[in-house]
Image (cartoon, rainbow, N blue to C red):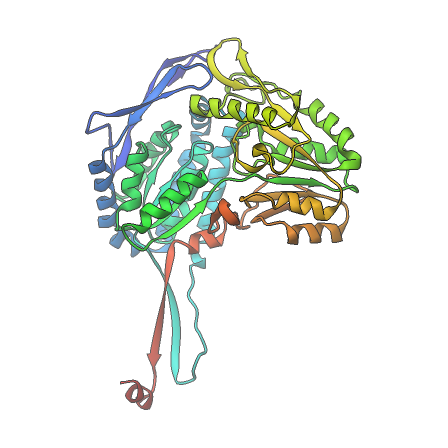
Length: 498
């Protein structure tokens, strides 16, 4: 892909998918066009795989699984390290295509590539932690457990961190001894085709398969009974549909990392200036709020509400919006027309329900970006828990400011949704921090911090935010099944059990 100095795409990417070690276009003649959400330019296309092509990929993964399952940890690590090194060497290329395909700004997308490499290497370091146990159940026997791979596993990738999730999530599945079929998001599939190029060069045929396509393509992956393990990141509705579809074909291990409506509680004793910086950073304007962990509900003590709301508005006003390849800007467009209309509809809903519009609330026109899906960074004040912008995940650049009178009410507000992914608490009091972190229904709680994912610390949600944990040893172990072995050591013991 060629890009000129004015961020215009002068050559489109003709993407390929990877099936059984072969890079290929669309065998059925169906393609998915990708357009930059900032300009509506056609930037590339990928195959829209047929059911037969996805089935072929699953068959290839199944055929390769026995041999791959017998490889040593050293061999598995060598493959992941080679992919990571090649990905790192092309970080700039990946970041640019990600920015054009998603609308996310190029700086954060560059960080996504490097974080993916870091996570891959993290799992390489865990390769020898796939351990069983000896269990001292009886003195006459030896009791052992083994960890064995499922065989074929499937990963379905969202549009907000395409290469970050696709590359890093290959690692734990493969190191655990599985082969994998990756299905990228149809809304941002281009970086996956670049990853397919790397994997085709270094991976044995069938071990890694990357199949682009729409929801129908993904449903074939979910329903195939040979795929015993499915991992998905995305919306609650899609996660529930995947659970149902998977259960209709076989008993499967399904893990889901779904949406969030994440609270950020500012306590009375907090450093308010630090809290404001953290809360606005945690909103993830670099992703237009299109991040599951965005702290979209800022819960503020009533005595400090006026001061904090004013300072939040001042800081959000500084968020510069523009073309995602412009390194001087903070926020780009939302990913698609459908998402654009959804965000605008929630702004209108919030107004209708009585939320106080403090900043933004309109679509934007950006010079040089005709037809771009730009929405102003938006802040609503005096938001009540019953309002839809406080209950439903918008996945857009909208912050809700919510006053509280005491900590019990703050916890009640925090827990008032069906989500429970992340939360943040800002306080200088240890006891307050412990009370709130124990009371909040969320899988990941930051105390005087926000947004960072620390290596080895499991990430995942309570309630409708998902099931299962990723990003630590838990994720790699989740790609294995436990087998128990019992050895009867004495003749009397064998006779008794015969």
